[in-house]
Structure formats: structure tokens, C-alpha cells
Amino acid sequence: MKNVVLIGIGLIGGSMVKDLKKLHPETTIIGVDKNPDHINQALASQLIDEKGDINVVKQADVVILSIPVDASVKMLPEILDLIQDDALVIDVGSTKQDICKAVEQHPNRRNYLAAHPIAGTEFSGPQAAINDLFRGKTNIICDVEKTAFKLQEKALSIFADLGMRIRYMNPESHDKHIAYVSHLSHISSFMLGKTVIEKERNERDIFDMAGSGFASTVRLAKSSPDMWTPIFKQNKSNVIETLEEYITNLNQFKKLLELDDFEAIFNEMKNTNRIKDILKGIA
Ligand code: NAP
Image (cartoon, rainbow, N blue to C red; front, side, top):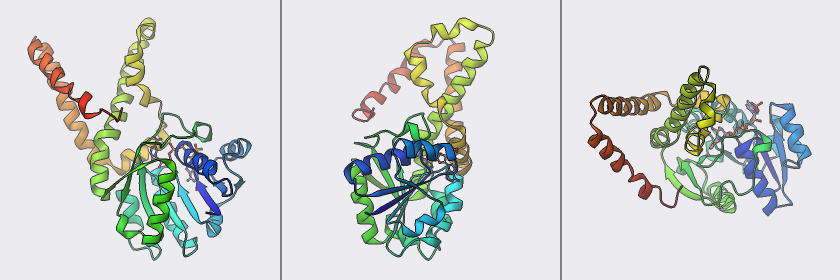
């Protein structure tokens, strides 16, 4: 792996190249980003070795595309137009249906591998990049059979370097399931944050009372709207379905409180405690 081109020098792509550079110091990391400050920060911190524009993909062995999902859908076909015959292009976006569809008929479709590493923090930009972000985490690969076999092997060896476990799925299933376990959690955190901020306008003391439960539940509300708006746009129908189910549960809980049915409230929480076993070894 001589040249790795990273498009989008932020949390996810930045963390990937940080680990790859540590393991393969001989590899040159070339960074492309629309934000000149991020390029300068990444050069200064040696996260990347060189900067470039879209045309550097012509000399890439591996391209990692790590920008908001709406921008990826537009840029991926342009990248596939430019690359060498044996180059591997990996995208790490949080939605998979639109991007897989966008290059379905592209003559170089076999150079592309659709991935979604299930790892992250609420921070963004090159300074958010950390080592070992992906160790022990799951990476979902979609439509693997559409990628050339040799390039599948190359991608798997990169993911093994990062310490990731692999799951295979089709893009439709990915987007449906991820709406529940990721997209709904973000909406619920954003709206919890909103509810409390609105209350705080009248009662300035409220944040003095906020404990670690509030902080951990609202952590995701620090996430970047630039990244999340296109995710909700692309996965709108699945997200609406999850929200309808969530709102039904919230209304049901409210109704039980109004009815003073504390036995039912107890049972609701007791049943949901099963999440401890379900998440054992994950969180
Ligand atoms: P990030 O930290 O904000 O990094 C993205 C970088 O790309 C920023 O420097 C951004 O600049 C730049 N950028 C935006 N649009 C661009 C464009 N059209 N061309 C070139 N550069 C562009 O984002 P991230 O959290 O790493 O997310 C990257 C991808 O990973 C997204 O597709 C996301 O869905 C996926 N993902 C994220 C997570 C997570 O938890 N964060 C987890 C798994 C997958 P500006 O900041 O100036 O816009």
C-alpha cells in the first residue's frame, strides 16, 4: 500500500489513517478536504503527509471516502471515473442504500467497497481523530459480492489492521436496522437536549442538578448537524418508522402516569432491563 488518499480528514477517516500509518509507516497518506483549516491542522499534526485535490485519486492504491453522505453520493462516481485499474475505494458513510444505488451501473463498480464502521464519538474534524477507535468494533460491509475478490481481500486486511469485526448485509437491511440503533438514538438525544435547554431559559439552576445520567444520555446531541442532516434525509422513511414507534411508547408511558398505573410502569422498566443482557460485551 504505497499511497492512501483520504477524502474528508475528520473523526472517522482521520482515525483510520492514524492507525494505518502507525502500522505501515512507509505508506504516504494524502489528504483531500474542502476545509483549508482542517488540511493545515492535519499536516501540522502529521495525520497526513501531503495535501491534494480530487485528481490525486489517480495515483491512489486505496481511497477512503469519509465525508457527509450526500456529498459522498455525488463524489463517489467522480472518484471511480479517475482511479487506476487495481485501486480500492472504501466509503464509510452511515447510510448505504443511496450510495450503492448511485454507482450500481458504474463501469468501475468492482473497485468500490461499501462499509459502515460502527464506531465514533460526538467530536468531528481532524483533531477528533484518535488511535484504536475501531478496535473490537463492528464494520458492516454491504453488497460485498459487487467488489472484485482481490479488492475484498485488500479491504479485509485493512479492517483487520484496524481490529474490526465484520458483518455482511444488504444496503436495505443496513439502513433499516441502523435507523433503530443509531439514527433514533441521535434524534432522541437531540430532542432531550432541546427540551432541557428550553426549560433552562426559565430556570437557570437546572444544569446544576444535571448528573451523569443526563450527560451520557444527551452526549450524542453534541454531534455535527452537517453530518446528521443528510443521514436523516437519505434514511427518511426508516427514521420516520422508528420515530412513530418511539412516540407511541412515550405516549403510552405518559398515559400510564396519568392513570397512576405504577405497576405497569414498573413492569415496562423491568422488561426493558433486558437491555443489560442484550448489550453485554458491546457497551
Ligand atoms: P467529520 O469529522 O466532520 O469529517 C469530515 C471532513 O470532511 C471535515 O473536515 C469536513 O469539512 C470535510 N468535508 C465535508 N464535505 C466535504 C466535501 N464535499 N469534500 C471534501 N471534504 C468535505 O465527519 P466524520 O464524523 O468523520 O464522518 C465522516 C463519514 O463517516 C460520514 O459519512 C459519516 O456518516 C460516517 N460515520 C460517522 C460516524 C460518527 O460517529 N461520527 C460513525 C460511522 C460513520 P467541514 O467540517 O468544514 O465540513
